[in-house]
Every structure is written in C-alpha cells, then in structure tokens.
Length: 340
Image (cartoon, rainbow, N blue to C red; front, side):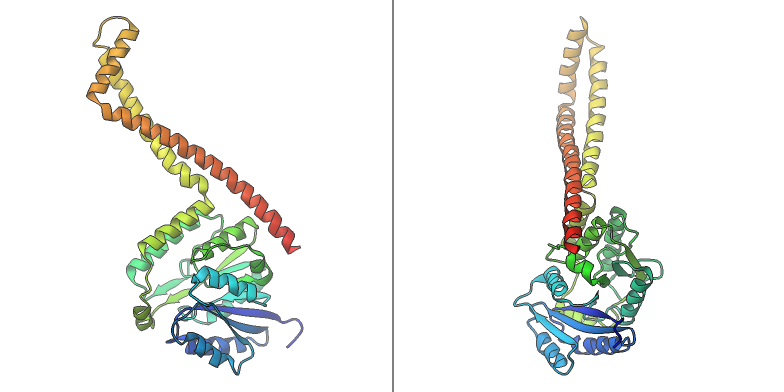
C-alpha cells in the first residue's frame, strides 16, 4: 500500500439480516479489494441487537479477514444510535455508509468515492430521486410517500439535494466524527445534512438506483414499511429543523387571514345593521354590534380565537427563528473549535 492511499471505512448497520448478510459482505469485500490500487479499507458492521444469526455470521466472515470488524449493540438501539456508534468507531479518512441488503449495488461505493475526490466535498449522497436516478420494485405507496417527503425537505434545505432522507452516503471521516448528533432513529440522516449546512460544508449527489427486486422474502419476514406516522414524524422533525419560522409562521398567517376575513365580514354586518338604526353614531354602532351578535355569534368567536392564536404562532415563529440562529452560531463555533 502506498503512503498516499486513504483509508475507507465501509460502515454497514445491520438488524436481523441473517438471510442476506453473508452474500452482501462477500460482494462488498470483493468490491473494496478491487479498489486496492486507490484505497485501503476496513469493513465495519454494526449489529443493532439482532435476534437472529446476523452477528454470528459476521463473526465467521471476519475470522479470516482482518479488515472486517463487528460492533455489537446489546439491544436494538435503532438506526440513529447504530450510525453514531459506527462513526465514533470508524478509522477511515472517508466513511461510506451502505445498506446491508445491497438495495444499492456495490458500484455506488466507487462512484461516491470518485465524486468526493473530484469535488472535495464533505458529503456525497446516493440519490434515486435526482435526474438520472431510479427506483425498482418498491411498493407504489411507499415510493410516492418517500418522494414527496424528500421533495418537501429539499425545498426546506439550502442544499440542492433531492434525497435528504437517504442513508447511503460517503462522508469525510474527520467531518462526520466531529458532528454532535442526537437522533436515535432514521431522522439522523436529515440531521446530518442540516448540521452540515450549519457548518457550511459542501454536499454533492450522484444518481443512484434503489432496487428491491430481490427483497420480497426478506421484507415479508421483517415487515418493513414506511408508515404514515413515521413519515409524518420525520416531516415535522425536519421541517422544524430546517425552517422553524415556517413551521409556526405559515399556520399563523393562515389563521390571521381567516381572522381578518371574519373581522371584515363582521364590520360590514355591523355597518349595515347600524344604518337601519336611528340616533347618534355611538348608539347606531352599539345597536349594529348587538344585531350582528344576534345574527352571527359564531363569527365573533372565530374572528377572536383565530386572531389570538395567529398572533401567538407568529410570535413563536419569530422566537424560534432567533433561537435557531443562536444555536447555529454556537454549534458552528463549538464544532469549528473542536476540529482545530
């Protein structure tokens, strides 16, 4: 190995993958050996508390291959914790996170590494939703739900990245180990991009092919699904993370518009009814309000309630935007200091 070769950590989180893990590791290991003229590598598997034979299979595979390491979680800690522990244990100058089921073919590894070398970015995302990317054999409802949530998050993010939630990525090793990450679930992938944005890190994408053609039996056993509740939680989390002012401001402005429309309608009713009354202006307005209350009491309630709530939401939006700015400045300062 030449001194100029960089170490690549191929980080593979796995949970109950006994049906697939041996063939996946064999393919990944062989592929990384094929890159030996450019990179040296370690293959780090994070067994996230599997209840099947996943850990035993990985141990057997690693027994004759010194480049392979296994890190076992005592119980299922979920993806976020598995990745955080994997990042901390990684040694590579570049850390490539890859699916244990090979739903992305192994050639994506080399393409992400090439992109990182060419553009000198901190993160490379394998994106099935960008131009040139594709998906195969994914249930229609799951595919559509995933596309829509990524479309919303791409709009919220400052990056021109079409797949914000994807896990298959390449990271600069020093950069990813320097990030303070908190998420326990799959939202960690969104958190990483957000914090990369805070750190002004450069991010790139490659078109990817997400293929579930041979996943039917495994998916049936594991009952893997993208539930509406999970998607909703991720969308709420990420929307608040990227744009807290919109999270509060948009509903606040909608309620304010309802309040103003209701108030305008009431004003017209009061003026119309006051015109039918005699006496001075004060008397006519008093009678007009009384008549409007008799005719449309619910409009008074709607106008008042929506106005109060809209003011509260808009105020919270402004406070959240200010807090976000303070957090980002502090996070940047602390992380930048830690790196140096």
